[in-house]
Structures are given as structure tokens and as C-alpha cells.
Image (cartoon, rainbow, N blue to C red; front, side, top):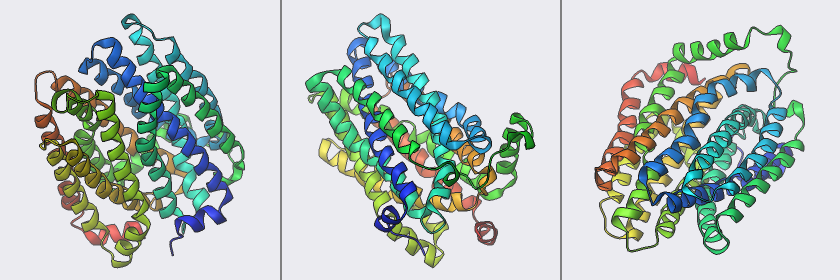
Length: 417
């Protein structure tokens, strides 16, 4: 039995505290994203390379540090990790207030690197904690709620971030981002230590840090299901990493008669709403898919379809039609991700969950960030429609790979059990 969203939030105080804190934190993150991208665009003369570098700084450090962050989350207090990183991020977010000229672009890059690095350790501890906070029956809804809030505020935060930046300037958005981290820290402080981990920590009884890190890698490689998830997400990220740069390209190349901040915010909002809708219907759809034993075909076909729809969005001349196709594409992938992540998390034992889940996410986002940078460079000599078409088809190919790897369905049933 899977708990519904309302039932989970009403009956589980600890998960509820984490969830509400993350709502505010995610809102602030997207204020920072829109303001940071707008500020870099304004002082760099709308350079796609500068935008690509900023996105690389926002994602690559997070991705590279995630395997280490997962090991730290398995060995040390997850609650303390989240508290320290939230407070650190509240101060780091203020660095962006110092940027006033092209010569100070490096501050934007440095601030993004620091925010990304601390976020890796926060997210590693949070990801490892959610299955314990939600319980087996609440995990599907918890995964959907956590990620739907992230994607919802990709939409709302992008829209509000663009509005605040336009009305009050970029610095107001950076201040809001800083305050949001303090609110998140308070929500984590309300959660008891033992609710986040199954047993008391005793590092002296464990092997060395790098031995434990290596064990996470070994587990992933030798567990066929975990290895399939890892490779599939890496393939998806080759195409998916170009998403936000494609939005920038559409704003500058295709819908150039409109305000670029409005166009990007509008596409980001559609992207976020689609992912949120996908997550919100994931509980019902996921329960049906699991009851019928159709997880394999569902994951494969949704991956294929979402990439095709995204590629099609770049070929239309109407901003509203492009946004609608992006929304539909992201709704589909939102449901797919909730089903995929729930199955994956249930397959992992608590003692090593942080290492495996963060290794997967770290590898995915490493490729995602590199793809974003390459896409930014590509836009200097290639039309955005071509970049988007390639990105969509590559993302779709992850579904083909999934089908090829999951031919032996019986092995999947045994590992899932």
C-alpha cells in the first residue's frame, strides 16, 4: 500500500518539516538562477559562452562531489551535514551582491561553484534520509513530493525570480535566496537525529573513508540493476543537459522580438509546471504501473516519448506552442522519474544508500553540466533548432538502452524484491 500525499504530510511530522523547508529553499534557488543568469547576460553582452560557463559552475562541482557527499552521509550525522551546509549557503549567496562589472564575472562563477559544492553535501544527506523519514509505504509519495516541489518552484521561482529581478533588481533576488537557506536550516533543526538514520553512528568501527567510497562504486558496478540505472541516466544527461541553454538559445535566436528574460522565464515555468504535474500524478500512475508489473515498459516508452516531444518544441514558431510541447514532455518524464527513483531507492540498503544514490546523481549531473557547456559552445556556430533536435533524440535513446538492458525481466524482479 502506498500512502497518498495528504496522508503522508498529515501523519508524518518529520517528513513534513523537511518538505516545507525545501519548498522555501527551492524557491530561493530559482531566484538565484534567474538573477544570476540575467546578471551574467547583462554584463557579458549576452555571450552564450558566459551563460554556459555559469551553468557549468552551478552543476559540475555538485556532480563531482556527490559520490564523496554520499559517503559522508552514510558515515556521519545527516542532520548536522544539512544544518551546516544550509547556514554556509546563506552566507555564500550574498557573494553575488558584489558583482557590478564585466571584470567581476569571476565572482559569479566562484559563488556558483561554492553554492554547488555545499549543495552536494546537503542533497546527499537529504537523499539518504528521505526513505527513513517517509517509510516504505510513504516513499513513492515522498519522492514525488520532494521532486515536484523542486520542479514546481522551477516554474514559480523562475517566474517570480524574473519578476523580482525586473522590478527590484538582481540583488533583491540574491537576498531572498540567502534568507531561504536559513528557513531550510530551521526546518532541518526541528527533525530528530535518529529519524534520519537507522542506527547510531560510530565511525571508529568503520573502514577508512576511501574504502567506504570504493565500496559504493563496487556495489554499483556489480549490481546489474543499479548499474543499468547509472548508465541510463548518463545517456539521458547527454541530451538533457542542453535543456536550459536551449531555452537561452530560443530566447536569443527564435523569439528575439520578445524580452529574453520573459522568454526564458516562460519556458522555465512551462518546464517546471510539466515536471510538477508529472510528479503530482506519479502516485496514482505509479501505483497502477507497479500493480500491473509494467515498470520496465513504462520507463522505456516514457523516456523515448519525452525526448521526441522536446525536440519538436524547437521546430515551432509560436512561443506558446513550444511551451506546451515542453510542458507535455516534462510531465511525462516527471512521472517516469518518480517511478524509477522509487524502485531504485527501495532496492538499496540503508547503510550504503547515500553512496549509491549520490554516485548515480553525481555521474548524471557531471554529464549534464558538460553537455550544457558543450551546448553553449555549439550555439555559437549551430542553430538552436539543430542543437535541440540532437538533444531530444539523445535523451530518447536512454529509453532504447533501458529496453536492451532489461531484457531479462526475471533478474529485475528478483533484485526489486
